[in-house]
Length: 462
Image (cartoon, rainbow, N blue to C red; front, side, top):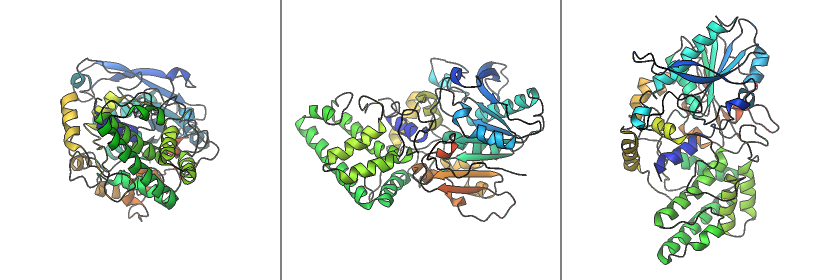
């Protein structure tokens, strides 16, 4: 499987990538001419997709800008909280599709290194800044509007970067579930094992009994897989767990076990309330449903099946060969490139002491994959923090930056939680809120029954 490590990482951090075709958004999306490279002298342009909701806008009102992320399809504004805010604030709600995703493709060169050579953080930020400038010049009454950037997950990281690196354009930012720590393909990365520590703690805090049964279930599955490796008796696995295909060798069996572990992770991270519009086809509260099933289960197979069936809900079978595509609608190649460059989030290892079998992070394998696939090596995480102004010191001095994290979302372990409970020593200092029972970026979605949000309206004043 190509780039297995980053495929798993993509599944962990791109869960805000659900969307619809731009043709289905209302109002309909449009495109405008964007520079292919803001850094160089090239005059090449491409068509970049955007959407505007102006029905609530009062001249001079603010602009709420949703920064697009790694979605294959456009995330329509009406699936988000932005129209609710716009109505309350008399604001203009806008969104811009991320370059190289969806319909916004600067080029499609066969050579991946050449294709993505303009896919860097500065170009992505300049896309947004140039779009804001264009919006202000074309929308009556918006010339002097203040701009608040917002986004979820990777797009939450980007909205933070916009405020930190382009404060002349972005007056403030709200980041939902933004990963800002844990970067760097190095064994010195202090966050290498934080993800599964967080997942394990979530289960233990919700039910110590269920957590212990899950631990025994995975150990039993692991023992069963070891026996299958030695006896070559793996035919029964496909029917036992409703797999789309039968593993053929030891590597396949290991991949299946990773899918199982990932399912328990995703069923915490994606535990949103009922009828969440941005998670189509997925029923609400999978974490609680999984815990309830686990407590009543009489076998380890029942527990494993429960986790897989909740994760692959709506699918006829469990596709263990495609852990990302079954439930996250994103484009892997450009996102993998991003993971190899300015967002080097490492595929998490599992330490001793959790409810999951311990294993190391394959750092050397991941670096080799970046080099082989794109001809590049990941940058150092600490250097990136300094370069793009999101180190602990930078965020401690940041202004008009508000970050939220879900209490049952493992991304919180990669969040800037050092700001939690901090008393700002500067006016309008940065802050963090934790939503105790919320999933990944749950509060970015349009209001729906059962939703848990940090706020209905967030005002960032000068």
